[in-house]
Image (cartoon, rainbow, N blue to C red):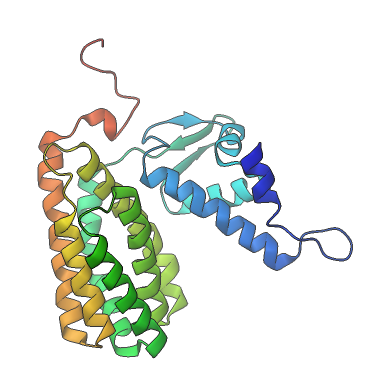
Length: 253
């Protein structure tokens, strides 16, 4: 209840006691970001069934912003709406997500080329600041902290690219693969080290900050290749219940 009360304090009313349109939109975005984070960190487990009310209680947001966020996440193929039966957190289909990685590669090439070419002084300064934080904290950075920075990098690149249409197209893909990365580093044996993914992100940040377009494209391709390697290990080595919690365990605990 305390979280919900704090969230409600974000909304400010107009002269007639209604939340302003801008604040309602901000509130919807906050609900979307919260549910997206729960999906990435598998606190909402792939394959899980739940009700809208349960999701409201988990997030601390009311019915309208959660309903709005769920509709967007349904369009993103991350949540399946089952009329009269509630919500189904979409199971992870490794074959599908590996196939979609090819789509992301092509889209990221287009976006990173625009971003490196169009980056303003402010964008370049932000890229250098994030690069410095990653270098200084790479040895102690937790997976949750890295995901937060990764989200900032994605947002910065899209902002620097300057094409709003790309945000709606790429953001769901970013969420899909951020969740894959989370499962890979959290649950695959011997894969907790983040240095590989940090190195690839450093390459992107440095190229964008210095407006080296071709280097930025190569760094983006290298990151996608690195992500593709994750699938090879996960297809054979991951517990299927991490991809769909409705799968029955082989043995009783």
